[in-house]
Image (cartoon, rainbow, N blue to C red; front, side, top):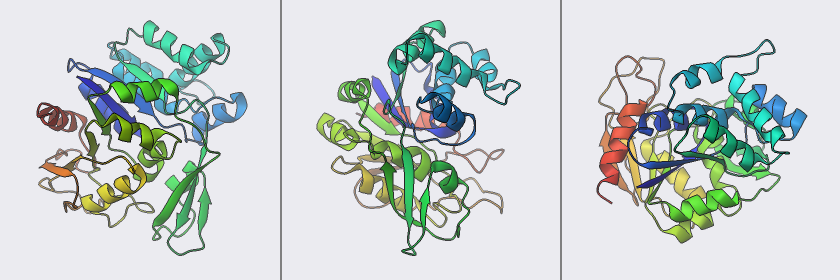
Length: 301
C-alpha cells in the first residue's frame, strides 16, 4: 500500500518512525513554513526551504537508527547536523531541492521518500477571533506574545506558493493520505493552504485520514474537542473530504498540567476511538499506538 503522510514538526516523524518497517511504501510531504531557530536562519541566509522538518522525517525513515540521534546533534553554532547535511546536499546540486533530497535518500539507504510541500518557502499569518489581532510567522503563533486565550479565526500564507509537482504525483498514486498528529495551525493546516493541495486531494479520491492530537495547545487549540480539530481540518481541506479520524479515547489519565482533547466525534468522517497515549507520556500521541491504529484502519480499505 502507498501511504502518503502530510504534516510537520515532531508528530509526523514520530509516526513515520513507527511505520518505517511496516512493509508499506511511505511518502512524507512536509511543511515549509518554519521561520525560527536553525531552520529559519538557513532559510534567511541561503534562500532554501527550512530544513528542520525535512531532517526529522529523513532521519525517522533511515534504516540505521543511529542517524536519528546523529542528525539531531548540534554543531558549535547550534545548528543540527542534519540541517547542515540537507543544506550541503542542496548546494551540491546547484540549489535543486528535489535532487538534493534524492541524493540524501540514497546515502541513507531510504526505501521511502521525503518531499517538501513546496520548493518555495512561505510564511503564516493568523487572524484571531477578537477581530483585531494579526500575527505573522510560525514562531510567533507557536509561542504567542499576544493574548493566548484568543483562538485563530483564519490562517493564511504569504506569499502564495504552489504544490511541489512530485508531491502532487505522490498524492495521485496514494492508496491513503494521512494528516498526522502535530500542531494544528503551524504543522498540519499550513500544508493545506498551498496552491493545488486541496484540489489534488479532491481529484485523487482516496481515503483521507486524520490522526488527532492527544493534548490541546494554549494559544491555538485550548478547549478543543476531537470534533473541533476535525472540523478545522475539513474547513481548510475543502473541496477534498476528510473521510476518517483516529482519535484518543481519553482512557489514559493525563497530568493536571495537560488539557487532553475530549473525545467528541463530529458529523462527516468515520471515527475510530482508541488509546493513543501511554501512562509514562500521557500528554502526547504515542507513535507506535498511532501506527497500529492506522494500519488496522488501512486493512479495511
